Amino acid sequence: MGFANYASLAQDPEFVQGLLHNLLWTAFFLVVPMIMGLFGAYVLSRIVRFRLLFRTVYFIPYIVASVVNAAIWRSILDPQTGVGDLLDVNPLGDPSLALWTVAFVNNWAWWGFLVVVFFAAMQGVDPALHEAATMDGANVLRQFVSVTLPSIAPTFAFLGLMTIIWSFLAFDYVFILTQGGPAGSTDLLSTVAYRDAFTNLQAGYACAVGVVTALISGVVVATYLVIRRARKWDT
Image 1 (spheres, rainbow, N blue to C red):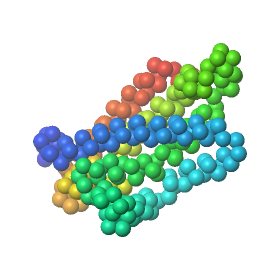
Image 2 (spheres, rainbow, N blue to C red):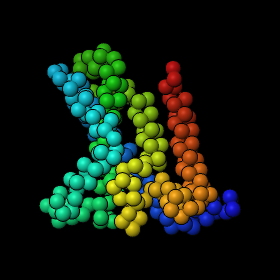
Image 3 (cartoon, rainbow, N blue to C red):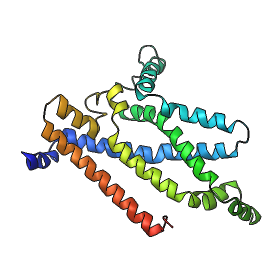
Image 4 (cartoon, helix red, strand yellow):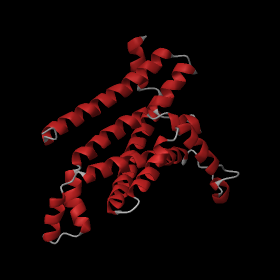
């Protein structure tokens, strides 16, 4: 029974669909929140007054319980009383929109964390590098690309690693908002494993899904460690 579970995964449409959605979810969170986090951190670094206040505002959605965040956004997106009614659309009920809608809601809570971490990394950049770039005639954008980004590369890579691992562990927002529906359009590996374990009562099969998820995370971590050593970020 044990190894048969792994052999069945590749032929299981729910598992394949969940894996595909996880890859799309990961791609989304490696691009959209990262760009938003970098931009937010850069804007925050240029603010002199009320910097602590803005950092707190950015971070609040991250520390609010996911159940609360999800409940708020469910009301906002409600197709009868919320934005869905105004736009004549059901964001959580349309299979073509549901996954991206849940990702958007999750991103609203996640990107503030990235802002704070990126901002802390930017504060550690040697000011002399920016001064030298300014003397060489580099504008603000050029300084950001040539000075700031290379200086925070280890932080960027680490957050990329954490984003990938976290994306394959994502569960709460999907389960609270859609429970994998409609028609499996928001299923991730985590919701597939949950349903196999607690609805279908197939604990062994659910464990196989979990092991595959852990192996994917292990490959990502190993790749990160290789890159970290090659770039000599430890020194």
